[in-house]
Image (cartoon, rainbow, N blue to C red):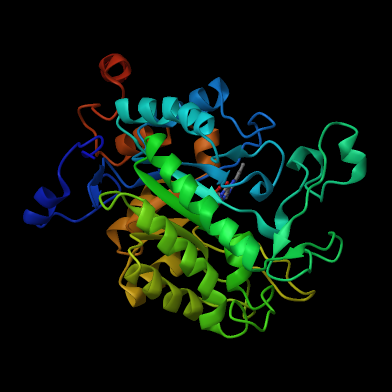
Length: 391
Ligand SMILES: Cc1cc2nc3c(=O)[nH]c(=O)nc-3n(C[C@H](O)[C@H](O)[C@H](O)COP(=O)(O)O)c2cc1C
């Protein structure tokens, strides 16, 4: 696969000893990102009831390519029907899903942005209501409005929280089905034209629930100590890497910590990131949280850039590229993350919903696009004149 949206080559920058910043291109295997601005995956709960994306998704996601982002990560997309968190999650388990997504990846590429698909199994958070319906577990009452609950899976029979129904503990049959689903979805991601896959191993969903000692209390080969808790997630990583073309990057999103001094720790993330790197993972996307914590335990306090130190530590100690995410708002803040070596990529979620032109405007603010080249030509020509007229 050829590079996408090559503005300047990253090797040329390195040769001239230039400092890397938000608008320095980045090569990941055969894919060249035009800059380090990433649209963080955001579930829209807006697919058809059988997981298909439509025109709405094309316009929503396509807008981010016109807005200058280097990489657009398409939301958590289930590898199987039961792996959805809600009925209207995106799916990638059949050819029709891949062909519908292909329109989006073609549009993104034609407009300079690379695309990634976040592959997901919701585990014990499956069978949920949409946020605007309460975000609780689907109940028989929801069936009356066409949303039937289904059997969720987890490391044990315990539900995500005490108020959620028990789930089915994954056994050998489910495990081999799961590996088959991830393999099939990876193959479909090629058909759909994605440049990258991101595996969702964060936020309390299936892979995270196997990693965390808070949820994985099994005492067999897939639970117990650190090595056994990593086992299923690593099998999935290996399966996807094996199916996914060697020239295309694989990213993994982690909950870097479960909370403050509880459960999965930053040291665990560093050790796991080393293993992921050895398995051919190119970037660790460093989020946090998503487990239902015992009372009195705390999530990481929310402050600007609160997860950036995780990306920094994992980058430094595991020697792997990282993506920082979470309450990054201003161009200066995002640029400092890359220039200061805390992360290689910066993902923004809500800022992009607020302003799909975040990247092109950041490039203006940082003086990185004096010729208005990051803007679509049909906008930039006019906007340059608008700027001159403003004096
Ligand atoms: C509407 C919405 C949907 C989200 N869906 C996902 C998702 O599909 N996968 C995921 O890993 N994170 C998801 N997130 C989390 C974001 O990717 C991001 O990590 C978080 O919002 C923090 O970044 P921000 O402060 O820039 O919004 C979602 C966030 C929002 C606001």
